[in-house]
Length: 77
Image 1 (cartoon, helix red, strand yellow):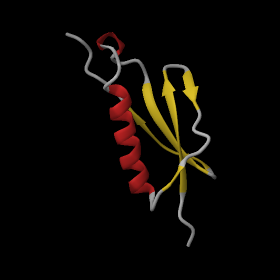
Image 2 (cartoon, one colour; image 1 turned 180 degrees about the horizontal axis):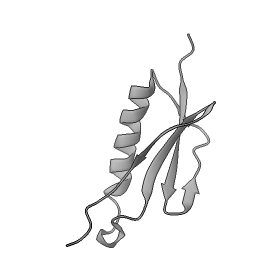
Image 3 (spheres, rainbow, N blue to C red; image 1 turned 180 degrees about the vertical axis):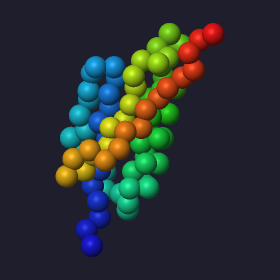
Image 4 (cartoon, rainbow, N blue to C red; image 1 turned 90 degrees about the horizontal axis):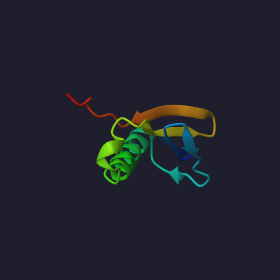
């Protein structure tokens, strides 16, 4: 059975940074963990004024989109 290859495209608002290389991972659960870690790492570098800016990791394989992990923050009170 072939090992899946996943691509992690980064969406920041309307801008999309396409992952040309991707990663070979054991399964979708491993891709979900990778996306969450990547999203957290990217989000920690955001300036405080950028909350709710539409940051997301869009994960796909050779067949197309699989899932999307998005950063969201509570709206200021």
